[in-house]
Length: 109
Length: 114
Image (cartoon, rainbow over the protein chains, first blue to last red):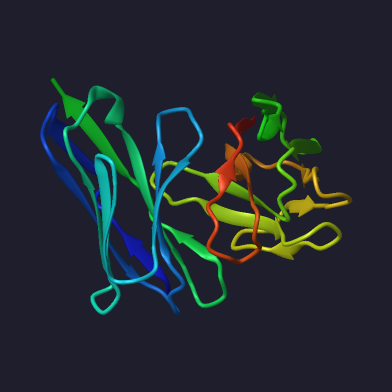
């Protein structure tokens, strides 16, 4: 079966750096997405990786290793507003998105 | 700019009743999707439409139906609601069906079936 694994919850301190991991097993691969979802709100797009390596976008970076079935989202200079759930999703060979359950990130002052 | 709009925002429904969740987008996106989100689970695809006039079944289609009469609207109907359909429902759209474009989500419809 297809599976996306990410930690259920993580806690970090304001101003620090946090890495949220995502491992996947899917039938084929056509890209990996990260979305941010604040409580009670809709998910919003953060990043897309289809080739191995690091994609940097401001305070957020996303890394992909296709051979390891692994990605991480790196958040730097954490702010209180970064408290949210972070969803990892993989597009399989049929171009269907398979979603992880999300990682709830709690930022403490 | 509205983007993608869902209605109602929240609804409590008696089991056995019929319910339609509305979804409208003004971005002229070809592809539209309905997901449900339940605590501890990832988003699960209910139905999708790659372009106006076509629809397809997702991972959890049973008990739901959709239509896509035009580009903008993609309503989701529960013919006879059951308590297991209590969930938050998200409509989404993208400018390329099955492609690598990002999804744009509506604000969600919280449905409680008693």
